[in-house]
Amino acid sequence: RLRGAPVTVRFVTNTTKESKRDLLERLVGLGFDIAEHEIFTSLTAARNLLEQQQVRPLLLVDDKALPDFTGIGTDNPNAVVVGLAPEHFHYEMMNKAFR
Image (cartoon, rainbow, N blue to C red):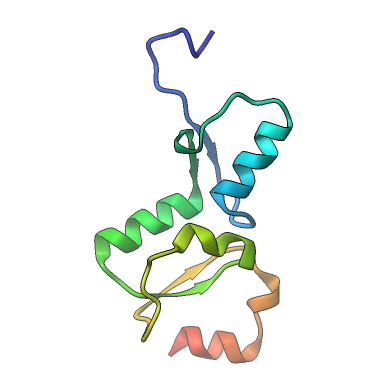
């Protein structure tokens, strides 16, 4: 019914563990009729903010989430993006983030 209604359809999630592409594949596999541009994640919001602010982040996100940041400069970071990524939360990385 939503597809036939005069409304914009979006699938919104706060997951930071997987890229939009991985999420799309999982949802299609579950039988959802969905296009990638209809998915909005917290990673999408983070990327939009990074682009608006023109900053270079240190990405403390799961490796599966990195494709959502393709093309974003990360050399000499001046910002930090934090997602659910326990493997990156260790003393050395936290020190780097605080610097």
